[in-house]
Length: 102
Image (cartoon, rainbow, N blue to C red; front, side, top):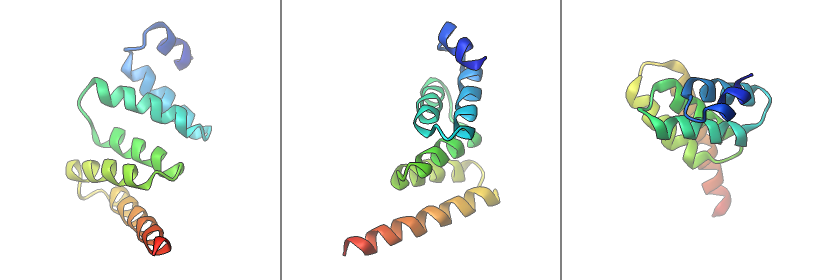
């Protein structure tokens, strides 16, 4: 349903955002990234958008991008426990990657 709405009107950001959420549930992280990125490019960033886009990047192992997006989300809602957990997770992954390179 959302795919048809996006195909008909690529600027329909609500449909694109909802399509990205469905793609995340289907483990199509690349598709989710494409759609979340289009939403982000078309308007102001909000916490959920930044968090979800970061999650999609983390799921494909793009931890630096995930961290960058999650830092932005953190500035919008630093009290959110999910973003605090996400940042801790990604920092652990980045630390492990850095140690493996040495």
